[in-house]
Amino acid sequence: MDFSNNQHPTTSEEACARPSSIPRKRKATTAIYARKRAVAACQPCWDRDTSNLAILNRINHVVTLLDHQSLQLKSCLSHQGAHTKSKDPQPQFQGPASDNSSGFQCHSTAARGKDLPADVEDVLNSLDLPEFPAARINCESILRWPIFSNIVPQTHSFVLEFCDDESSDNTSAAYSKNAGQARRGAYSNIIQEENFITLSQKFLTYVHVKNPILDVAKFKLLVREASENGPGWDGPSCLVLIACALGCLAGPFCPESTLYETPESSRSVELSLTNLGSAQAFCLAAKKRLGLLQPSLLYVQCLFLFGVFEMYMLKPQQAWFYFQHASLQLQTHFWKKSQNRAAEEPITSHLERRLEQRLYWSCMKTECELRCEVPLPPSGITRLNFPDQFPSPPTEMASPSALPANLENSDQAIQPEEEKSWFYYLAEISFRRMFNRMVATMNSNWKSGWTEDIHTTMEQCAQFEEEIDIWCAHIPPKITWDVSRASTDELSYYIHGRAMSCREIIHRPFLYNVIHHMGSDNSHWLQATALAKKCLQLCVENAFHLSSHSRHHGTWYVARTSVTRALLLLAAARSGKIELPERWKDAVEVCMMTVQKWYDEAPDLKQAASVVQIIINETFDESSMASGCTSN
Image (cartoon, rainbow, N blue to C red; front, side, top):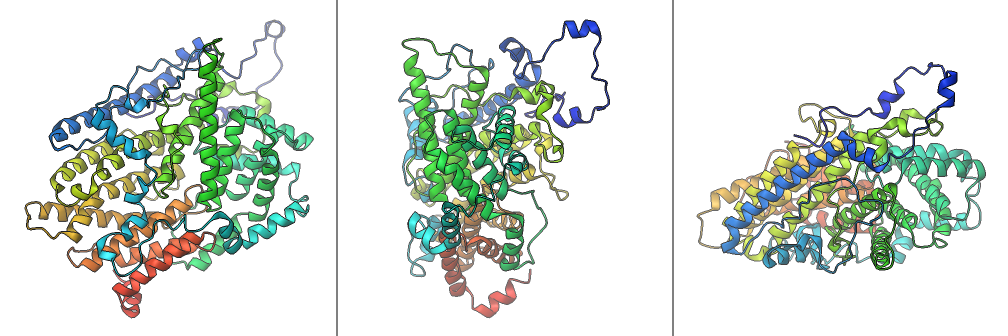
């Protein structure tokens, strides 16, 4: 079973492979009764599309399996007060909402809490606390472990210690200077209309595939209009400009290993692949138009892409501003539609409904991901009673020929692979739901669960690992990572990294237990030690897996998790209570190189790296560390 159907619909690549020399001349009778294919299928045709229903039914089946596992774990642990996750309502999928219904009801009670026991809901409610889950799983939380006491001062958040103004003034002087030049018109020659199509294609290929929040056909029309007539002072032009800004930063996936490069050479290569000056010029032009927009779904799209741009620039605080604003605007949009239903039933087109779904899930998972690293307040979007468990596939994926032929240009070499992109997007959504439940369960009562009641935590870990196995088993072959050989597929690379990171996090309590174990109860010592060793081995594997990466939406997360894994390995080394895996010193060095590659652009990363270096110096003398990092 996987997310895909056994017989895949025709892809855009297959359509392009057809002979292009077919005569366009039609017979006379054909001309009289010419039938023009619509861009979007009507509702009855969409509902009859077996590929759409097969994909979503298979995903719903996976979610049902995971929820069944959750109920089993809840039943066996209920007497100890530990519950793994909630059972999300599982309505049978019947296609997208009808045209005369918004499909959304604005309630104060979250959908995740519907028909759930109060104690299970309490566990999930912990996700809405500003300090949680960052205070349990980010790198600052590892620094608060007793093993590091009296070595470095405790830090609440490296990110929040730097305000946006100071960050911009002190560590992004080049950005500020370039922005000033742009305000004086120095960048007027950079924003050329003839570059819009090329940059927008790069955006679609390298950015949009991971968060498909746009209608591609409509977006291409907007790009063509802007390239022919110049950008206006309206929402469509704002969208095109911020997409072009991202196109200046985004590039192809480069899986080549960088283990033996210096951070300086790695940065030099990275800068040669991106055009920061042009990106800033396009972004500034888009910002000038953003303030003129009225609340709408287009406004939400622009806000979200501004957040993605700031993540590309390694500015999480500024990205949070846009992501949270996008979430709030989307909630306002849903609320207004729910209020209008009292007077008159609103009409929602299929395209608008699919756009609402994608915006909701992109905003939700982006907020959850950022709040795992920075203690920030939630926007409330995770508690919406949103009826759709997954977004509906775009019509174009199942029927590529529905797109007007004149939208396709000669730049086919970098056209996004719609089907793989959609499978990846659905896998990301299902992963985020699973990960949220895991984090809420294993960290809601961490003081006793990680020390005294370790047996319960072991049962939870075993159940969660089975869930991860189920999730991995249902990943479509097109985005499955092949561990037996090197892969150049970016989406498969990220999927594999998700699974590895999740496994490491659920084994982290046992590393804490072994390092800080002071009690007389040794009944679970051997089992806890084995699980702690697995955590360390996963840290090493993750360090090398993420060593080769370029600038993308998740670059800042890669650097942050590198700090976390280095700290976990150093904590084990300082304790002397557990055998460390092979090449663990190499892994620490690789983690430091990963952070150093980017910390000139992010002051929080530079401060985190300096703290890790202090711990390294305290744990080893410089000569032994230098020799140890180059040996197995």
